[in-house]
Length: 433
Ligand code: CTP
Image (cartoon, rainbow, N blue to C red):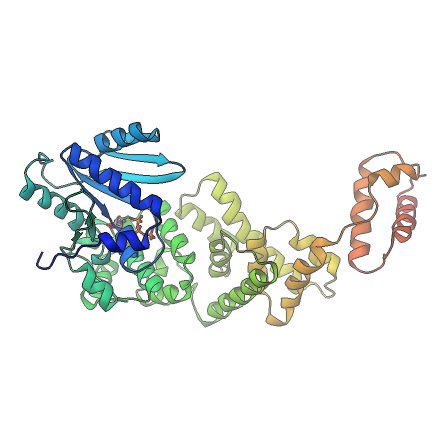
């Protein structure tokens, strides 16, 4: 460690007061307990990059569970401890603070000997994925703010590079291939040439196949949640990674057009309603896999080891989306009522996907659905039907549904129309008022 940089002013300037205090307090407590404590990982990376990230990850040389328990005790905060891994989570006024004990391949060193301690945090950081994630900042009072950069993290942030720390990084954890792509597109960084080569080796050696299905899905979900996910898809294609998701080609220029459509519709929606969608990845997922057959979609769910809940949401969502697109495309006369009945059962994410998969001239269907159809309500209700002398039955539902369709399609404009049509519909069903 040639030049040591102190970040206490940076911490003071860039962190909200409450996080700064947490770091100071945990640091002083660690002094008391004669242990070293550091903030690590994405928190430090994002601090240097001026990105918002308040996922506080603390690594302790010694025993993090002791620090966490004591800290929680003094603050009256909740703590849950994982004794086997010597990790803990403290929930303080709704904020989550993660504590982990520095891990080395050998054994836990006693906290008192400084030379050994620093090798302990060094080992912990060496086990991490990329240099930009291998930075730490000490929080003990005496060294508060001391930046620990063993592996050139600062330089790589400056050079905009994603770089692994050693050749076996992807062997240790092949899912890092997807993380490399995710961080590259999120920050607009390049994957370093050697790291690129290692990714290619991992693909050639089929290391990716070892990733559990749940994880494989998780990584895709994270990628699809990034603003620049389209760039990430290009990289997934370049590295031939789509084959781990589907034997059939899913990524090509047509798909790219669909995805661009999706983003247009989604930006229109967010602008129109000042509302973002937390799970927009679902729309992107649907569009990405929209050319798979029923059987292939079901296989995809199996590959991902989906729980029943996920199957009901994403897999069924994808199948329904495809079905609605097919119906709209095949229908000669697409009336507002038909559009309403097809789209209404879907949640917004899937409606966006439907829009993305229709030809662009049909965009207006989706827009009209959101601005007009979904807000169309009848002026009368079951009570009005009772007042007309009809006995409540299933027929009420049928009649009200039909009335709404007539209203959507413009046959009904006022309350009187609604009542007259109601009578007519009851008559058609042989019911007397
Ligand atoms: N990590 C790793 N290998 C992995 C996953 C995580 O080395 N396969 C390490 C990284 O050092 C990372 C830290 O664990 O910084 C925390 O992981 P995570 O919360 O996934 O990453 P963040 O860097 O915080 O990313 P994000 O901003 O997406 O939360």
